[in-house]
Image 1 (cartoon, one colour):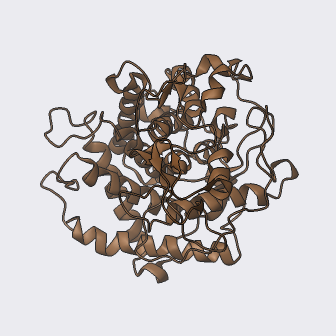
Image 2 (cartoon, helix red, strand yellow):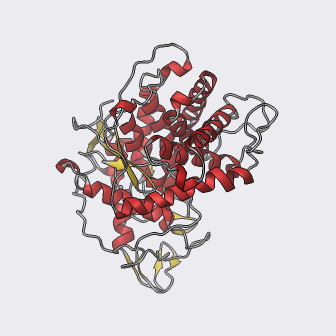
Image 3 (cartoon, helix red, strand yellow):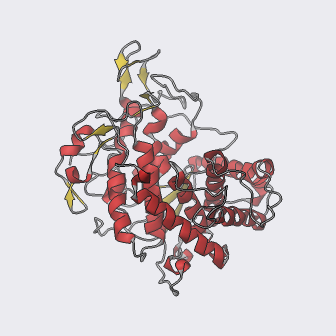
Length: 448
């Protein structure tokens, strides 16, 4: 499977928009055990620190606030001050509410610590203590995965969203690789293999999740597959980036390309003949998940949160940048279209869209000169979420500001790679998100 382009990938890894340019040196595994399949990150290749400027400063404060909360209040409330009898952290269940936050906190802290963003004076927690807590999270998450704790009543994994939780854990573990004990390294690999193979089975469903079938018929009413395809892809991204010599690498890559293309595929894409990774787009797609105008339907409505979910749920540029490998063209397919819809698509209050009435006041979802977001058909879990949209702004802007002339803008998806992306960061308790312009001056993607 060939990846496009000979350009050197220089990745700006964002954690809530804080940039740290990174590269990686691919090292050959020295052993034949499970951990020997991993290519560690070559830290000697790091040439630049975090980005400078007002935006970087603002997002840096948000990240450090999240770090402080994770290391103090959250840690205590979760009961992690003392380990369980077996020496591992007790997550108390294998459900999302127990595993997902722990994995996300581990990833956010690892990114901060290893990419030069962490400041002990801001969190009140020493670097040594913070590293110890990240290692404890990774060690416990990997050990309590069902691949490493068969028969355990609290063993997590092989469920609907678990590939995403495992991908967060892989990123944290890969970043902290030199700090992990041999048994944890082996268990991290076993967890990654298990979740990658779970994705390969379509999670025991007959088909990959899609909103429409190839004929354009809605087969999953009110429930796009965009975010699910994206988080399933994230697990395969993690596995193939961290273990490029793994015996299953080619299988995983093939499935990964399908998921990445499908996450933001439109009905018209299923008949396109543009060649991606060796075959026409139409042959990759079993259906579509996005409407032609860039919107997606989830929770039975046009849902702005899920229009940026693809960016939030998987970050191929981050993983492959750390591995110093080219980014698959599929990893940027149609990513600009949801952002364009958020900024430019206008709704008229009282008119129906996809069977549901648009609410007052109407207009674009991104409001001019405001951090607020208009939810045209409401939001069943509140309208105050801002981090995901700020993240989308940061990714879009960093792509436009790249110093390399060939990566200063969003490119035709069938020819170029995506210059920047990031791991999902943890939630901050307080944020200060800047206003945005609803119609930013940006290049439109060319038709391919």
